[in-house]
Length: 266
Image (cartoon, rainbow, N blue to C red; front, side):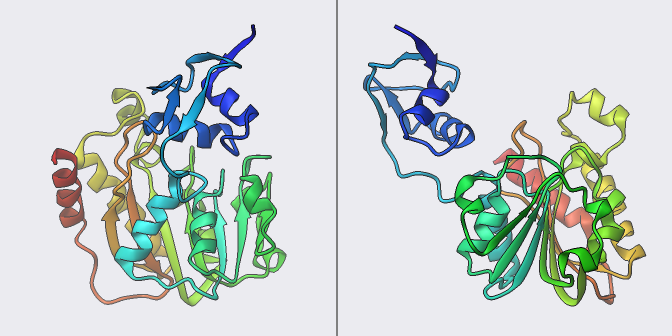
């Protein structure tokens, strides 16, 4: 009898909408195989083996949705009835969170293809713009300005696209940017940690560099917080609440880094 990976078998049986969702359920300890907990998506199972999900499905299509939810709650950003753009949408965790929080519409932009969850593709309030680099977007092309902009980018620095992000918003807009130190730090630091940045001094340097980039375009960081959910490889990440308007005073990055250290140790 043919055996399949557990994550693929869950999708085949209709127990999960996607392989990523299946992997999340498995790693969360929510899947039983023949009555026993399975923690490895790569576990091989027979087609006849009983599979059971012991808890409800995750709220969002990916872990990113929980990250954005925490930021919206902490920063008290209201997205209801807002026109939003999600840059670096990937599977659509941020997009899903925006929709579930009442966004009027979300334009989900990503350089990849076929990644966004089919549930979001089918949602009339979501428009998907695939195989699109934000650096190639023009405000006219996408109907900017947007009231809310979210960004979760991989393998590129936020600083490299900051001018493009600011072109998509206006003075009263809210920008929620996820800073990933592993894509902002220098190659030497990234290689030293094998892709995981653990040095708080590098976190602080990264955040200050992003802050300088934001200030260059007359924007300002209103608030900053460590994400309560780490990156997939265990990287500490930071959320910024940014306004396109110049503000008096500057955020004390060191305090945010201290909070991140405290969270890591608890």
